[in-house]
Amino acid sequence: IVNIRQLDWNSVIASQNSSMADDDEPSVVIGADICYEESSIPVLLELFRLLRAPMAIVVGLDSRPSFIRFSEELMAATDFVVRQEYLTLLNSNAMDNGTKEHERKRSAGIFRALIIHKAVPTY
Image (cartoon, rainbow, N blue to C red):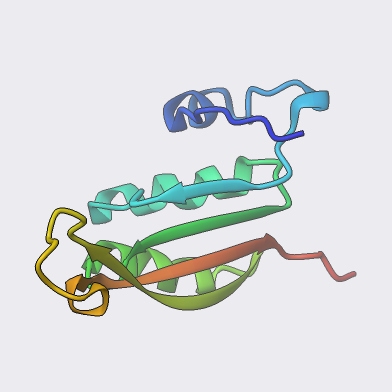
């Protein structure tokens, strides 16, 4: 069963917990284009620390300086294990009937996908 919920960052940070019932904890959190400004990086890092999901996937435009910095800070944090993958997304103009399919596709840019796991503490 897949359940989808919108996550309000402000309520999570304000309440200092994920504001979800124990039986409603997500198994994965997915986000896209969540870091437009560098001022949001500390809030995002705190949000990922507070979330009870064991895994998160975040995708953002690789040319966006704030997302690059967020990625770097997340990877430097000792409480996360982060793997990066790069994606080239294509867009195509379905209305362009005059060209062959392969000629209609154009790159929509290079995106960075972050697969984030909470680090297992070592004692």
